[in-house]
Image (tube, rainbow, N blue to C red; front, side, top):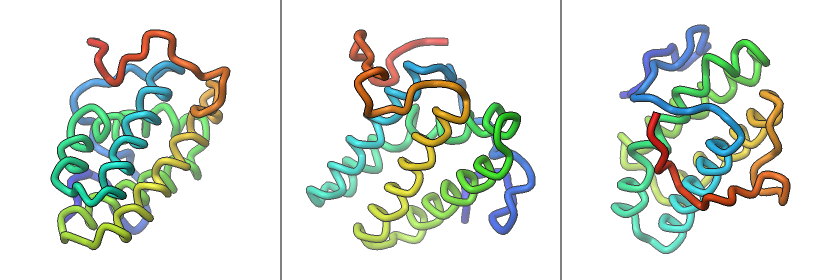
Length: 140
C-alpha cells in the first residue's frame, strides 16, 4: 500500500510529513540531483541502489514540500501528492523499472514546477546552481 497519509484518489489532505526537510532553493537543487541519481541507477538496472538512494532525504522531501506547496498552488500540490503515492505504490508492488522510471520522471518534473510555484529558481537551470554541492547533507 501507499506510505503516505493521504487519499490516493483525491489527495485532499497533505502527505504525511517524514523526518524534516528544509524547503528552500538549495533544497530543491539537492532534491533534483537526488532524483536524477535515482533515475540514473534505475536506468543502469540497479534497482536496489535506486531504492536505497530514494528512501531517506529524497523521499522525505517529496512529503515535506506538500504543505507549503498547497498554500501556493493547491492543484499542483494535489498533482504532486497523487504522483508520489503512485510512485510509492509502484515501489511496493515491485513494478517494472520502466514503470518506475515513468513515475519518477513525473515526480521529478512536478518538483521542478513546485520550486517555481514557491518562488525559487527551477532546478536544472544555471541560476539554481548549488555552490556547496551537497546532496541532502544539511541538517535542520
